[in-house]
Image (cartoon, rainbow, N blue to C red; front, side, top):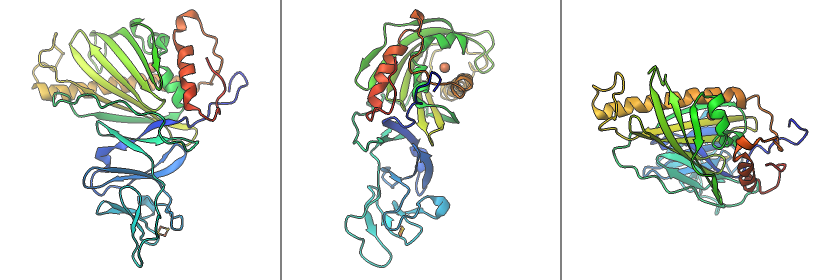
Length: 342
Ligand code: FES
Ligand SMILES: [Fe+2]
């Protein structure tokens, strides 16, 4: 839109967040709108996950719990005639007769990283063209993930673009001394942007604090960004997943998941938290970190939800790597349903 071009195709190819594994614990059946489809997801007793289109291949019933679908013994039971599907989507039983041969749900390829469940989406019906990265090492000095989700009108490409839009860090979020570390690199589906900045308090009420941060944003398609964060004044390591998922062609669900490493010897006292046992302090700090990130997101949402896509942005020299990012994005529109950018 904006300068007369078609809007961005809303469902670029890639891996998109579905749910946390925790929310699919025993017997839970999740239904949601995802990339313009209705899907269901569940897991069996061994923790294997199935993400499937919410359409029964027998006679087309929806399968979610709101129409009566349920999970029994790790299998999904259709509410209409009771056909039963196993964790890979095959029909394994019906109440009255042997299951019809080769009857199965339309299932999506899935991947689980740190308890976060992702599924592959391709409007063109292509199998996964690339994989998400290896799971980061998860020693027990890393706390459990905190996850928050916000829904607003927007586009996943514009959300991930903020990783390379360093100028906005100053103007929207008020960060100081924002500097790139090296230049943005692209290797196939992986884009890496590194930068540093100073963030002044208050973070969750700690007025007057100064945080010196370096961050490495690993973008793997438009639904999965992983940010490795080092905070130098306290000596805190944090991980942030930024997971944008198209809902219906207009709305996007943006989920943040954060995790921090236990700080045994803080370099300086964290006001009000110094007396807590390290494990509890880590948990509290993680909640503060994700609250601060959500505040940033709310500032971004104000811009995102009213933004018009400019396929040919009028970039200035200080806009850095936006052009490179736009060229990187083209691979996620294999049908060329997007106008040229960058
Ligand atoms: S429509 Fe699902 S069992 Fe008949
Ligand atoms: Fe931002």
